[in-house]
Length: 304
Image 1 (cartoon, one colour):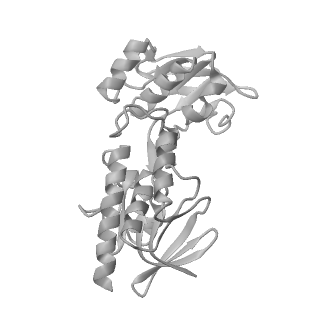
Image 2 (image 1 turned 60 degrees about the horizontal axis):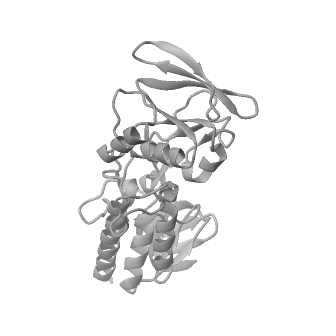
Image 3 (image 1 turned 90 degrees about the vertical axis):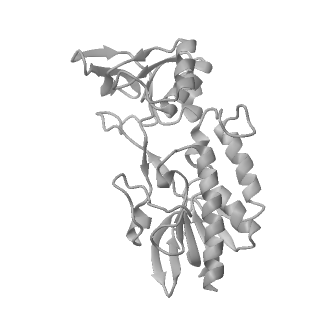
């Protein structure tokens, strides 16, 4: 069993920043990531509001943060946390590859893309349906695509797809977007069509997506449309179950509840980033990761 001062769960912006701060405090920490470092921020086509960069792709920014974190802590990818138990004031952490004993835990496990549950969604993932325009956008250059959603992510995906030569339309179930004003203005400037009060009712295809049935919830009319691809951006689901299993309090939306120090109701257990809800912005996740790391350090020193 490996022993660490702190285990950080998740290698997104919050987790990587926490790793930098724990390392700088001289703590023996490790970041464990079930997939690849970067988290959902890797999927952002372009980031326009991170201090120091007028514009930078999400993947590039997270690569830089990851390289900095590696100077201070170890990052283990493709390793999933399976179980956590409290043992004599410490925590035994069981992963898909190892067992650890740690004095403190920082949950930076982020969120998973929310699915809309429409007929054909599961069937056509990877065959016309995607949740990541930066990953799959170039496959649809010159083709007809829908982006589903009304928030920042949906607007960013639509703008990115338009930039790389995809024929894109945005559909939203309401009559106004939730996206920030500058993104809405950019959509208008680029002339990207928006189908208001519209939901995706059915996805059609043979081997790949070739059409959809749309429903207008205002006129109560359906229409069929020939479509080659669908990018879904309708929010996220918090990855909070393991924290909940050890007794961490969560809210009605399953986000982990923390105080101003990013501490949960369990001494020595902290959470940072999108897993805590609130303002889901990369700069906020980094700030919360730093706060969690500093206070985890303080907690450990008090317990020694």
